[in-house]
Amino acid sequence: MSRFIEIVEVGPRDGLQNEKALLDVDQKLTFISRLEAAGAKRMETVSFVNPKRVPQMAGAEEVMEGLPTAAGRSRIGLVLNMKGWERAVAARCDEANVVVCATDGFGIRNQGANTAEQMAALAAIAARRDAQGGPPISATFSVAFGCPFDGEVSQDQVVALAREAASLNIAEIALADTIGVADPWTVRARVEAVKAAIGDKKLRLHFHDTRNTGLANAYAGVEAGVDILDASCGGLGGCPFAPDATGNIGTEDLVYMLERAGFSTGYDLPGLISTAKWVSDLLGKPPTSSVARSGLFPA
Amino acid sequence: MSRFIEIVEVGPRDGLQNEKALLDVDQKLTFISRLEAAGAKRMETVSFVNPKRVPQMAGAEEVMEGLPTAAGRSRIGLVLNMKGWERAVAARCDEANVVVCATDGFGIRNQGANTAEQMAALAAIAARRDAQGGPPISATFSVAFGCPFDGEVSQDQVVALAREAASLNIAEIALADTIGVADPWTVRARVEAVKAAIGDKKLRLHFHDTRNTGLANAYAGVEAGVDILDASCGGLGGCPFAPDATGNIGTEDLVYMLERAGFSTGYDLPGLISTAKWVSDLLGKPPTSSVARSGLFPA
Image (cartoon, rainbow over all chains, first blue to last red):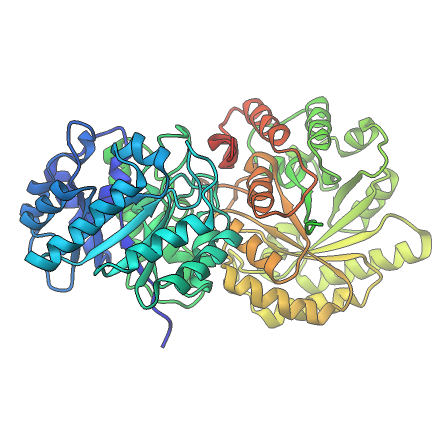
């Protein structure tokens, strides 16, 4: 049997969050249901941030309320702090993805808290879950390969954070190349070091295609033994630090690369491509993923 | 010392050949001189095809005539047949790149000759050079990872062609993913098989980013021991079989990925980026390479 790679769809969260156009709750629900029909089993559907600061993510509770129950589907809510956790629990998210910035510079500017404060919040959330229950927790370290404010981020720094997170009762740890600066050699080295530090915790990778290295980094991660990758339908999402740049790696590009090499992903490529075109039309822009423009091979 | 990867700039040939807008001889000369100033040591500068069929490549002799002599620079002319070879010799190209289509379907439609006829032409050119002299020959197998007409191209087929070419007195063999369908796992396997078949001949790889796998394929090739890669400044060049798709992997994207990982390339990234923007302006389109849009990291 072919090796299965789990692709977590992040279009409705990281994708839409970085688009100028706003989708309303009904449009988001349609987007999510199209993605699930195209094969998405785990998806970041909402973000429990302040809608005054991030208007693209408004209506998180309404989106979760509007989603039909579906066995075998996990709808993930992004969480930055205890208030976000409480909202995610109340909204019945299947998982909570707690984001911790790997650098103080990014953390203070992006979330108003330095890395140590965010690690403390992660630990408090995990403790609250231990005491009161709640969905499984994934911890994502943003800017884990480079920071627009603090510059280079060392492997030691990332490994130390991952090791600390792994000591908590959480299900999964993720490294995110938030601004798309990683190269595949660094990815491979960093994945191997983090895997050695986190024992049997699951490891997920999150790449942006800002400098066109996204799929190379994904390939390097898979070669280093990672089985879980984020991607965004249509390559949605830009980069606030590089206004003309592209966003997350496109789900259809990643699925194409993996399935052409014989991996299975559970996604339906034609369905992904039509969804990428549909959402790009809604947003008034062409898809930035490549496969949505080039078509498949063999046709 | 860091490992050196030789990047052959193909913007003036494969790049411009697939653009709608035409550059005149003076514009081409400026483009080439800017690329050499940015570090290009080997470059496909011209193509000796029929300018009635490929108007973008008109003026090959004038371009070669207009280039200032420069020690340590190799200006490569693309050649499809004996007539092209004779033109390349007369124009004093430093190298001739003879293209052979790996499939009959592509060969007949693109060059009016099947693969066996093109291999015979390659052998005849190599024999003519043995007898009368001329520049070193590189043989490039196009559609070596998939063909828009014949579909899948087997590794055995490519290995057999490479082995046959290696029996000739030529300097280098290249595999080209002309329509951008390769995945990095296939690249790695195919490179290893071809290397085993061609002995000590140099091996070069040529990737297109049509389905966003170009840099992943380049990474896989470098990991498999290849030290020579083609790329096109600005990601110039589209794909005639996928009208909305992007073209060759961008030189600045490839340089970014390699140099960020500690390889040396001899290129100057800011110079490449400004040249990518300059030529894209001339062609009336934004650069399709990512680094020309996103900027560098660290800045």
